[in-house]
Image (cartoon, rainbow, N blue to C red; front, side, top):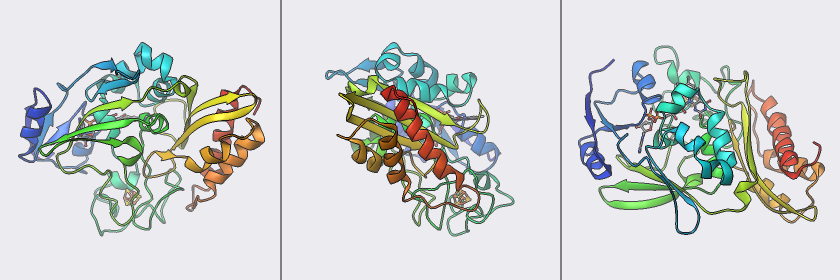
Length: 327
Ligand SMILES: Cc1cc2nc3c(=O)[nH]c(=O)nc-3n(C[C@H](O)[C@H](O)[C@H](O)COP(=O)(O)OP(=O)(O)OC[C@H]3O[C@@H](n4cnc5c(N)ncnc54)[C@H](O)[C@@H]3O)c2cc1C
Ligand code: SF4
């Protein structure tokens, strides 16, 4: 491991000050420390940000403000999350292990990096995300876990977070701080598609700090769920996952939100499927047609064509479950 310095920030302003000297923020360390051990990342300085807010507080309009240092465990267990945003609690509990969720923070979960095996293989594989311009060994390699939507010639990696898929479906907003001031960004605009610059995972400026995640008030969100399809029942990342919220009245879809995990370089908000569904019948055939409309743009790689049908079936099954009809 490369030598590095370690500082502990007492609050957000202190963290920004320490990071100005080139430090990388450290949450629970469950991803960044792994990447340092593998020498994928070699930061010269770490700034521990676990003293940032650990509060989960109701906002004036009935939403929730979640501090960046809240642990994944605390967020999934919070009574207001469980009752008003069940999709979020379920997504978090579908990820990692109890021990990792105890350590992992909200800020760190948002910025965890891809699980592409070639990205981790520093000695043996070419990777444009790790080293721009080097090439991508996944594109023509073993790419069963890789992207089917929004990929580029430069990178076909997927975003690994379960929590972010739920946050995308919930229209969450990310609160950011930098020496220049504060700003907010919709969660759906935080992560990037790879394009020609897969080394950039997000739209964050260097040194920008996540201070909180805000969930808007939503009656729809109370009727939501998350389903994760993976190779084994625990301790595995999603091949495909679906976060959805659905409101049905008189057999018609009044409102719907759908986001997909395991299919793209970012949590994939299924806008096409939502548009097809809104105002139409809440039937299995309509759910399937909406899923097919979303997946029409999918481009399979050598080993991951199965994800197209898997995603289509999972969207259909999740919506049928929420509508209370047999899939
Ligand atoms: C064995 C294993 C299995 C896993 N399985 C799953 C799974 O099934 N599903 C899933 O979703 N995840 C899974 N994970 C990943 C896990 O959820 C992440 O490692 C965790 O959420 C990262 O949070 P952290 O606080 O530890 O982040 P860290 O490792 O501390 O940091 C991650 C990144 O976020 C940055 N960062 C941290 N806090 C901030 C902040 N406030 N502002 C700006 N930048 C910040 C860091 O600089 C770093 O780049 C797994 C991890 C392991 C080790
Ligand atoms: S898919 Fe992306 S992360 Fe994986 S090897 Fe290719 S460039 Fe690297």
